Length: 138
Image (tube, rainbow, N blue to C red; front, side, top):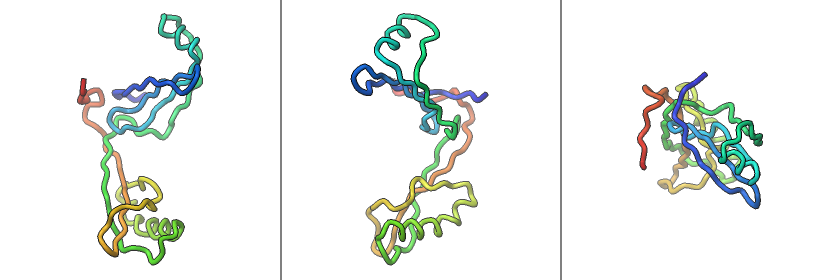
């Protein structure tokens, strides 16, 4: 079992469809999403226990971990074809992967770069000292 501080979001996903999203307050990774009807929501908030809901669990969520994000650049590929760019990014990224970094995405997004350079985003996670301590904005 892991302990962390959760960030909760309640939303409406259409007619008679509501959701409660739970994310880790440190890594901002989704942990779980619950979907329920208006009737199920009404039963829940009036105190009925055992109300059933569709539940999506994100098993790869980084719980009680702080995200570090870094923008790195490399020499621009000779083509702007997404497959070519993704291949160049994967090759360049290999040197960061050994240090625990992960690609934010496939690295093909357009970004403002200096001439002759292509930038992409990498991230990694570090354990937090106190998983129950977070800055609250309210």
